[in-house]
Image (tube, rainbow, N blue to C red):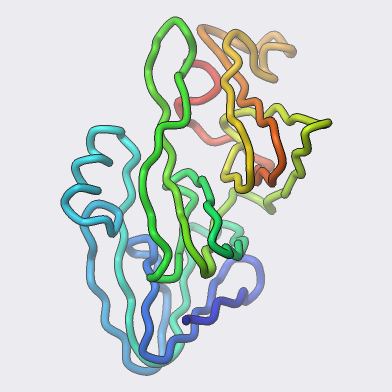
Amino acid sequence: MATFRLQGSKVLAVSMTGDAVKAKNGSMVAYDGQMAFKKMSGGGEGLRGMVTRRLTGEQMEVMEVRGQGTCWFADRASEINLVSLHGDKLWVEASNLLCTDAGLRTGTTFTGLRGGATGNGLFTTTVEGTGQAAIMSDGPAVVLRVTPQYPLQVDPGAYIAHQGNLQQHFQSGVTFRTFMGEGGGEAFQIRFEGDGLVYVQPSERNTIGGDV
């Protein structure tokens, strides 16, 4: 299995001994040794994955990197965080996924409705199995614990990923901007209940979250 390590907070070094990783297309910045690069369709999930992602709008361009040596990855100076999976599942926005062990399975899952008025669906990339994944954030990510006693409300623009036994609900009609008088249109928060971890970033990106 490939070995992941961070060099600083914005560069991921992956050491390989004949094994492979799946990485965001174009994220390789340097390598030594012998490496082979192959673009993969449908987020690395083949034709079915390509069709699913086009239908859901959860786009992910992936390349497979295989070889002997070390490969370095980075993307737009984003902060990188390592997540270890032990047979469990990670839900992550496709744009925030930098690299995974090749043995980890990726897919697309329906996570809820985008407000009662629109009825539009939200879809998220899943990573499942045993191995490591590298996720990105705009600024240093914060990992927040959710317990049955303490549910968590998250602004969709700050959400990166979550793992554990969590239920995800969308509360329509309010965001954090609403409290400041800056909201407009139909807005919502994501509410997490259960037991698990939620990764958030200290910067809001432009997404379908927040104001719809």
